[in-house]
Image 1: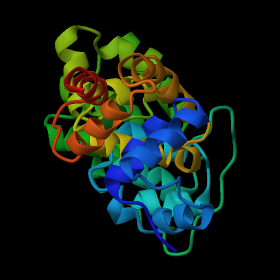
Image 2: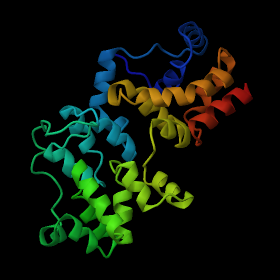
Image 3: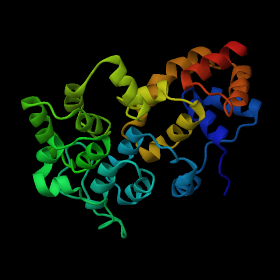
Length: 279
């Protein structure tokens, strides 16, 4: 069973944004293989270390929104820096909008959540956040915000009396922080830039068009229909006009794209425009 390379996966995702006849002609011209068979994609998902290394926080959240215990177990291993998400996954907290109750948890995850911070034990959720005096304390206290009710409780508390800066920042970089709550923590350009550096994006469209290197983003998007099927179309819709305008049915442009893919450091739109200009 053959698996496509990183470059083949990335270019293949963009080829999926043009019509089938054009895609087949480009594949014949460039030697690119056909899309992977379903069983190859399934095997790729199991080999998460090939695509989940340095997974942005928001992408991890979109995957968790499937509420799929098997996928949750995969993602759990690759979000070591986000204690809140790891705690929620290990407790079976659902992430799909509107879903309530708990979901099944893969064997081995229950009981493996991060240590409960002392401030939470002594002061409770809001009290623990108000006691924060460092970034480490902020991350620990924020890791206890797990459910939608928790988020609204925290938002109300901040509106009544602003939480400490470290606590607000630790909450804002949680990818599951509701937009309305995050907006109260900050909305200026520097704040937004810091969110992007932390891997937090407004949606798949923003992720697809702003993060680099392009190959890493496109490799993840190529698995989008398996990883976050409810959201991947947002990324496709954002990139499709650029692909059709700058690459379209120009076989030479697609050949240049494939040559640039592995070493290009910019984002996907910059890669597409550059390949089109060179050709």
